[in-house]
Image (cartoon, rainbow, N blue to C red):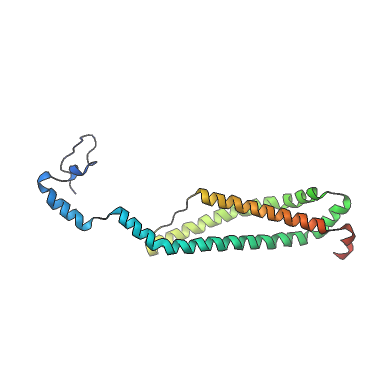
Length: 184
């Protein structure tokens, strides 16, 4: 629309009166009504149409959390069974349970932190590529935001994993007896 005059000379185009001539106002307002989009109504319709998509994403997040906990439990057990002889040897030498746990956790801590960093970078790269494809093919874009829910999920998964590893180690180490050395 053309700028007819500025009500405020310092800020032209900031008021609706800047865009129409008083004598032509009925004509402009009728033309605006044909192509006018009411933002609130469009937003409500978009939220309604995306509710099913959001529900699917919520289920996928829950499934992936359960999958990651399952994989973590399997890896923890594999690590403990792999280190069974080392645990027995350290017990025979006289190490205490906490010292053995610190040894095992310290050994895998660097690998875990490296895996987390690589996973985040890999996810962001995949997300960036997916976003480009969705924008090109479907005409909408996704954005990743560091929300408090995401950070809380990230921290809680880390704590659950740490507790799970700690309990598994404590249980496994307590069950290992130096007399079991010949059975391994």
